[in-house]
Length: 494
Image (cartoon, rainbow, N blue to C red):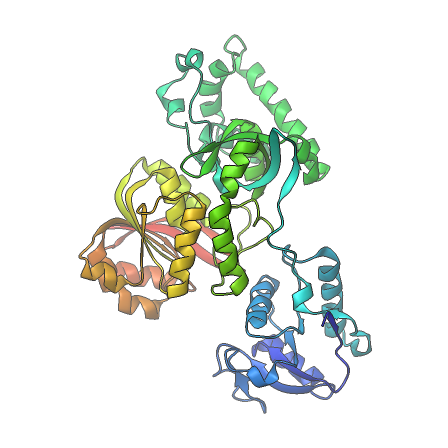
């Protein structure tokens, strides 16, 4: 089945028993046969004359159409994907994600709006969900020849140059040496320069102080040197106005690093510009040899089987050239929580003896801590057996050595091993009710600091940790919007 229609009198289900769902129900109950609401909170809608069911237990309704009635459009992708995983294929929703084919996404959005506008006679030829998504295993290459490949690469895999020519070493201060082989987002000379040009924030003194000599521009006055860099910025802005495709013909030159990422050889200005524009993927050029290493065909085939068989739903970004069309269910735009964590780690100027990740992102932060070389021992808690195998395979795909990240199934496993970690990464994990159960364990297994992202009620969660644990000191870092909700990012310490 490729298309479906919402003829009057059809049996439908309404996803979302909130204000919007109830309003839609009252409008359509005389047009369609509404079987029930779908909502994870089955205690909602008690005042309605219709049941509220959990999506896990609806096998008898798989032939019904489902209307997603949730105000926040950012949640529609996750909801539709979850419904599809539970056997539903006729789903009407807002197709806002870029994982969908363009024509099908446009048609789905059109049909959704016709439904909201009560144009029920026009709801024909709606794409089934199975027809919506792009092929997630398509090779994401812009162009290639026998020597080079140009492809899109996630920005978190782009690090600054890791070494310089011998004749340049004498020109480098200790300050600029500290920015060798670091994630682009924390390469402050370039990031500060473009933030100053774009927003008038901060200072470009760090760039001028360190880069003028490296660029052989030490004979230029500071004002003249800064004007020359501003011309570069203006050129990038003009190209950006033409659309991002224009940058396909000005890729960033990179080379593979054995730790599983790329070092930028040429293009640091472009990298900083793209980061501050919020772009998550950038066009890069590498040798064919480096591209083949990145593909890592043996472990890619193993991971592909896991994804095809549907044994696990990834909540993590997968940095791989054959999976760039794939998007994890948890999506972030512009400055990400990872960006904030990387900036904090480098501002701390500290390498932790050990770190433990407790998050909903299947070892995502652990892999990046390994790349950043910011902890000697790294552990990650992955609660589901299938997820454990998935994370293990994903680590191998991304060149994380076997014992560099220890995968555990629970906090209890850490406690039994009497293992203590200096740093805890606790992101999007615990509401207040959960904290009541786990906080005593965090007291025992985390000794120094907790990098934290709130789950749902930032103020309540933060106060509970401060008042009920040894981590009674708190430093706010940033507030941001993740998955359509506000969250807070900060650090707790003893």
